[in-house]
Length: 268
Ligand SMILES: [Fe+2]
Ligand SMILES: [Fe+2]
Image (cartoon, rainbow, N blue to C red):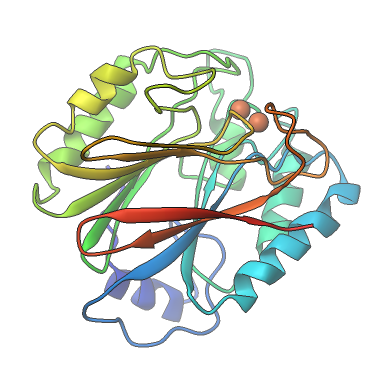
């Protein structure tokens, strides 16, 4: 099991110059805030092919670094295009200037089509493929929704069991944000995880509030009584959005006492 990281743990890890579950090490960190709201950002579907793709990612990283409200960043998969090691290394290089904690998940374009060892190159270069952390009074849980390079997936029992294992240690009253690559939005225009309801049912005794994904390149926000679901436009100079919209960029998540709000920010 990936150890649960608290913000205090992250500060210790960063001070030691080791980022076990995060890229890169932040250069400036203040004292943990005790209460109140905070903001993270999310990007997805970078689809890096070669060095020509890096200037756009650099502009996004600069925008995130320049936004003092952003405490950390999640990257929700498809950093690469053909799951090539060089693409993943370029993605790592492009994200390195980020001066905030950064937690990354694989997308179907980051892992090989082979059934054995498909995740190895992602885990070797970026990794790990799933993680759990506490940030202020929230819990963030990121899981690997990929099944080979498939677009339409049934989450396998092994990853469902990993989620079950994590939930044992999560306080049921802490608000929880769930991240993965493939959408869980109940009315996603496409690519919803086929056993998505089974996944959401795992959280029926926890305070799940936010579920955010990539893969469907487009902005979708859907609220239910308890949950906010999102997908986000791609953060890519090589791919288009599926809904024909032109705007690319990142998503902000504003975490409050027990709810999360969101907004999309375009980066040209
Ligand atoms: Fe994608
Ligand atoms: Fe994808």
